[in-house]
Amino acid sequence: MSLDYVKFTNGFEKFMPKEYRDMVEHGPFGKKISVSQMGSFKEILEEHPMCAGCAMTLFIRLAMIAVPNPEDTIMVGTAGCGRLAISQAAIPFVYGNYGDQNGVASGLSRGLRLRFGDKPKDVVVMAGDGGTADIGFQQVLHSWFRKERFTTIMLDNEVYGNTGGQESGMTSRGAVLKMAPLGKKFEKMDMLQMAKVAGCAYVATVVPNNPRRVESVIKKAVLIAREVGSAYIQAYTSCNIEYAIPTDKVMEDAKNVENDRYQFTEYVSEEAKQYLAERYGYKEFLPKPAAPAGAIPNKA
Amino acid sequence: MYLVADISVEICAAKSCKLCTQYCPEANTIQYSEEMGKDKGFKYGSAYVAVDRCKGCAQCVWVCDNMAKNNAIKMIMIDQLPLAAITDNITYGDKSTTAVLVSPSV
Image (spheres, rainbow over the protein chains, first blue to last red):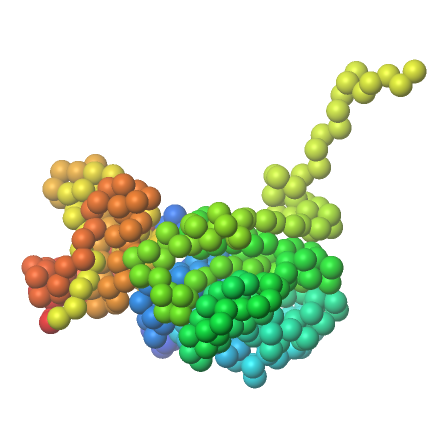
């Protein structure tokens, strides 16, 4: 709900809940904000029970700031640490059963399109690596094959952090965890390649030690998911409890992992490039100007 | 007793890189005030910590020491803070916030 659709009768604004008025008066509702203004406005995310120094929380905080229209966004999540923070925010949050978040989001995104037509309503799925790559794998992949128009964000902490440290499909080979004492015997799942094969219009990896990049990646993904097709973002959000990272070294670890196995990659389909350039003026995706006639080598 | 982050206004207002506001995992915890440094004659404003929200992870300390190389943030015991910003005493302006500093409730 935004002030564009609902106009209050003059003098009745004070009867709106304080949280909502805060979002309109001092927060991001109805205006454009960016990570460079952080610390000077009321954020969508509120106090939450996540562990101290959690990189996943940092990513969620940045993601909430990056969504282009927070007042017209619905988040869908599932069991896992992330839902503890995502639910403490001024964006409606739908909590699916474990693994069915992409199924729920498919129905939601279709329903919103029927109800609101051309007015953009963004659906963003934010779930952990267990919910996306293991237990919800079938629904995730099918929603991509159906080209459902919403964004899927994987909060990849490479472990089942909420239940004591079992290995997940996204855990790296050889990682020793509390509930996987012999080390994982299989490779980390290549979800990026699977997303491309399944026909996602936008696929990116990101690490939260670069807030501006997180912002730009999420903006692009949500805009593409409005009209072109599925978008997938895989974010490394370390679990400092299960991987025993001292809280003040979390960003150092993020930097090391980014250099090791989480380099920034971005895949944008041709259709999505054209859409971003024409509709939202993304200069990097504008077609390159044709070379001048004289520069073409003479084949004769 | 527990540790909270404390930002030195003297160092912060001289650089004002705002990196710590972007790397704190807690929402609205490291805030930015345009006035805080200017009343002491500095060019920029300063970041400050809403201590009732700080969980003491010290991520901002690493960012300030290693990324910004300013060394402006230290972890100190909450009862050692002379004056602290509390969320209830922070008001939001157009481009920055204003905090009324009080003795921290221990």
